[in-house]
Length: 445
Image (cartoon, rainbow, N blue to C red):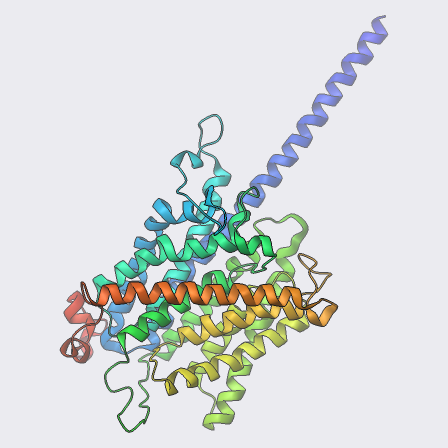
């Protein structure tokens, strides 16, 4: 009998120790995944510095302070708007199931069942907040050098608190709560890290703004001649591109939100290859067209490759990522030329980089999705049918109509209420001194 009790006690203690060890492993795995998601969020946040450098470098010195102010302010304003309204619309309970977007989430969302802070929910919110900030800041480049600062703040507020979250809910709402699925989620739309959800939506908002604003003074002559307006600092722009490239390792690999399985490693490789190919695609085409390799095109080509691979990075192999990136680099050069001939003035090429290349990248999922990668979907070139490509095209089209349409509504409302564009005198003098009472390079004035 004594031996029986000893055996039972040892069995219980052994089982308890094993359970504790398993619980510890599960906790460690969860906290490691949370750490990776937060590190990725920090990297994506650092992309704000990259956007500030690219946009300031591509514009004139007399407007550099204005560019920097907008990049600081649109994340601050947009981040609060996303916290108060946007996050709930994007991930909250779906009150309009047919359209697929939700209602504001109460602040108890951040609490666990026992009323204590829930680290996982905090981490997920932070990750989504910095993505929203990226979408909002894209439009500032397209609207640069002639937009009233206070009007832009309203534009950013509405973009972050409403326009971006509504489309995001259609495409990504199941990321947090699998019980709620937006319209595009149900169709099987794939946009792993946001070629369309983030980049194209931001670009179409910027396109709407620049259409309503009109071109900068002196950009297009009455005889049809296009006058180049060069950026003041290509070193700054190139540095911004490298910062963005670095931050993209949070954007794409970080969207795995977990270290389990190591998928972030192949996502990092497809992301890198696409950026390299994008830079070469734009360099070769600009070289052929302009008889010299254009640094501004190469910078934007690398960014276009990154934007394009953002949707398919989880679902394509390295060879496909090279093709996707190279085509994106070609597209961005063609997009800049096309917009110029349409007299749509985009000072930094934001619409071409984030809009056109983002649309291409999203469509490329339907062509290059490899069944051995990611979700296991099959593109046309790997035995799939036209169904996935059709769904991808629907997502691209809905994003374009929604973001451009809402952008035009917002821009026209601002234009006829508080005013959207600065006066001719302000534009000639520069926005820095008149809008902000400061200059980026006072010793040169």
